[in-house]
Image (cartoon, rainbow over all chains, first blue to last red; front, top):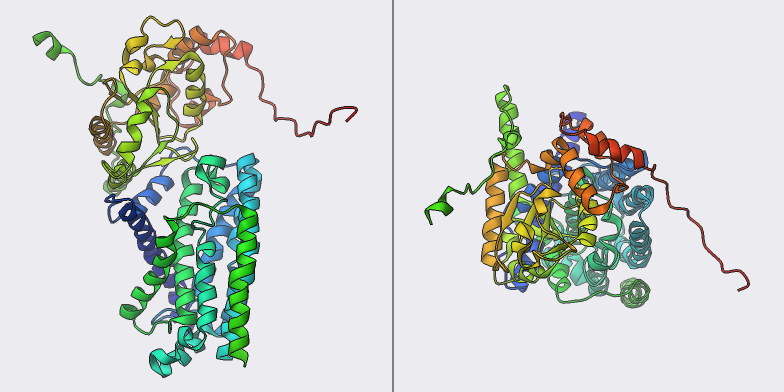
Length: 299
Length: 242
């Protein structure tokens, strides 16, 4: 692969991720609306929101770290997109692998924590401490699932995982080979995406959206962009590990949208768990299922 | 009836005639795009006063569904675009409204719902009620009624959308341009030593909206009484002897 081709892919992959992520946000809002018997927002609503937020005249910054925090939050996901192979583009996937990806996926939360810290708003501090505790809760099953899958495939290279699953059709997909790990993954997914019942760190009515409390204008816009990337990353990673990845966009897109639709559909039917309950739940059930799944795979 | 028709529906003010077109055609396209997106995505602050607030849940939920117009509730002034004043404004509430309004990010819009915000409504004789909202804040749209039904609320919001789309919804600029007038009315109610944490005059300078009406006798009075803002002391207070 020559260098210009690589640079083109590195530019294209986050853009594709952003566009697909916009539609995932739209899907989330549409699912919520349909479950509440509403019509829901129009097709380009997520885009309108982002353009509007970036075009606000007042941009209240609380200092350098506040701005850097948002850049880290978005930049962490932009870096993660280049490590996720999609049909036709593999970017840095065969050089990074899941180990790098697992590291990079922690950067956004930490960046957000830095940025919120400088806002010095008590609600923000409560929110971000809850968010980091939630990260501690879901990272254990997440790492277990990702490295369990890597053990079964015998490689940490995501592109090779896709190649292995594509060789023998559906029966060689991760979800058929290691169903318990896939189950643990789908149980962890709502927490990774920050959806109900694991969204106590946002809690709009109690702590005024927690980490987002001081974010207005382009800062809020940055977080909206981050949400697009977040949904896309969760969908693509799960599809790559368990649903055979993608060779053609026409089969790949329905898979990632389906994966993202599952947590969104259950989200609107649940209230929230408290932070300590999130920790207890995450460390008990997905971890238990994941360990059993790993043991079965090792036998 | 013929008398009624003479009352103008919209108060035309010179500074709200919409922005002058820029000479660069591409910049014009950009401006149009931005004002279109501003109109199609309005976050309203979840802060409601008085009884009109009861009409908003049906307007937001399945019966009338504001989200199809891109309007959704947000919880902090930093994130919000619209401030809905949904009912009578007591003097105590007005202080909070002004604090909230000044923290919102421009461009920001104020909507007065119910007759109480127009002229005091049934609280006309009350000593503790601020009667005419537009004396204290620039109001974009009034939705009269006691209380207006959700259809009327949505109709009013659509009028605001049309205003923003055509570049007319600029009432937030009026607050900076005529700050002395608004501050004077506020001082009449709250006393001479009224001050808010937001430095409106510096903001007016920042947006290049400082006119001869921004500064005046009332802002001079403000400067006399203004105390610099101090950060809250971070300290855990332990009772002695415990």
